[in-house]
Image (cartoon, rainbow, N blue to C red; front, top):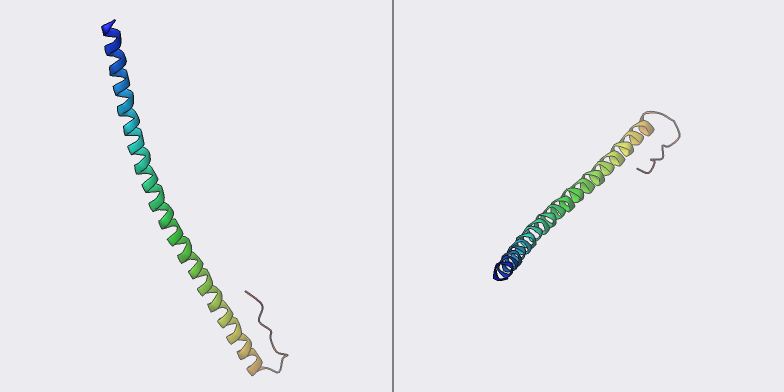
Length: 83
């Protein structure tokens, strides 16, 4: 009977050690997920800024082209479209 109890104690100890190791692994992965999420947000913000800058440049270019066309011909005024 004592051999059975020793096996039970041994198994309970192993289970506790494995549970602790799994908690540590999960904690480390959660930290990694948080870091990657933060990096992803930064990349998304940078991409949004780039899109906004590109839209501003396109609008400025379109306005410059319309101004040039209006100044060089007698065509009706050009109305810039929304970007």
